[in-house]
Length: 514
Length: 114
Image 1 (cartoon, rainbow over the protein chains, first blue to last red):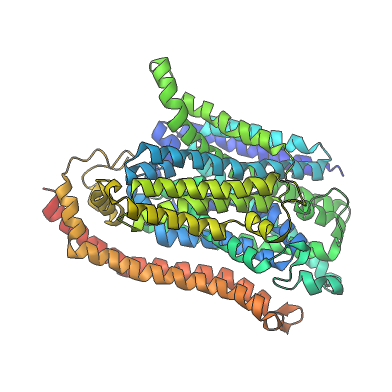
Image 2 (image 1 turned 90 degrees about the vertical axis):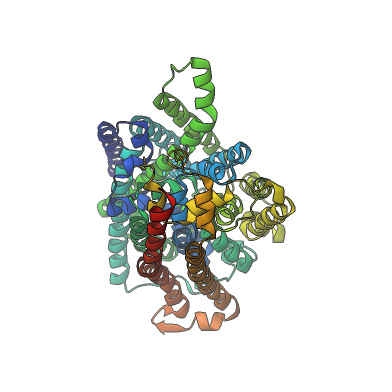
């Protein structure tokens, strides 16, 4: 199907994003501004920006697709996405702010005083970021193809180009503005069509899904859609989402844009509210899809159900208009999440890979901003190429795997790093390597493995939702190896622990925060 | 690179002293004894939903009004409860944690950093 309204909506979102990015460029002056917006962002803006950055392709299209294809169990995804912020807030947010580390590798180095652990953390940030970027590009391809009938790979390219332009031009300050605006675009784009479609549904007497279907589809843990071992899968998903959020590369840095700990808490409260409101609407599309679209046309992925629904419920101009609004909102989701991730991944590539080498070779000719821009291009090109491969997993499942990797690596590092004095360098490194290897292997097999061989029985369930076993193993390895190597506890641990747990102003009275 | 912490010149002994002080130990203990049980409790609440769904499907599919069953209400409550727990934490931190933290700060500024 080809819809001019859809093309207009998508173009508009891309132009507004680039426009605000260019406007923000004038506000950003120094490298420090570039990274954390000079800490001058208010709580309301910041919460909107966090919400805008966080609500990705998985949230906008993926949740509805999962609810549609696998039943009501999948409502756990939105709940888990929200709870992750709560876990992050109560367990690690305040100590992390006080650590003075902008990124996860910064924290790893500050806490463990080891360049090696820092490098491991950098590699993981890039890996998780890329894994998370792939479904953003794929979602864009899907949305553009659904609305305009264009080749699916075109949307991947459009989003990749806009993200590079935006990140290269603006940096963090403009991104904060862009992200905040994106949240409200997304909420409007998901809520307005939902209300219209629900009105149509109510006027038709509120039809229910076909009876034989609702018995398994509507039953919690009924195993609809051929997914085996639903109880294990659900537990594992909840664990991954609750404990993975704290280890996502683009989440932590947002806490630095708050002026103090109190504001950070306020911000998180608003974030939980904003996410909750948004997630009330996404399952509506999955449920209505079950009623109006009992079977999908051949070769159409369930992830497109949100975009297809309006045309089925109310064919004609109104349907086309609603589809266009949804496509615009979906593009806002891809652009904002991909921009945030790209900034974080590029920051790490720049700091740990490019800058040391280029400065060495160029004798100081190469400025910090230039290497950052080069890093941004590297950060996008690789996941863009990977997004063109065919994968087995839906958008939300791929994102879920990124959470699982984060929960199996950064979660033990952060929780033990913040709360356990006996964490040793060797223990932390062993935990990161073990958790990362296990979770990334499971992810690779699930995403790229041949269906039918790796996709049945317990093994498949364990590989598809690895967090329930990889996370405890990573914790156990970190703790046991640390206990076995007490001589490798960082010498400055006492000082670091005071820095992490004493109130902020104790430290900043001596040195002005930058 | 973290750029505020490293530039300080004060010596390690202040930090060791602070870490071993009664106030600091008390501060960490207060924080842990509130936050860890809270985390355990809300995770248990989320897992309870799954347990109910797995072992009490009749209860979960009991219809309350029209097509709305217990499971659906339970599910929506998860969002409400997440928000409620966050409010509880924020209020606790404002009322009970910050004042103690303030006291330690005054102590360190008065005694440690001459």
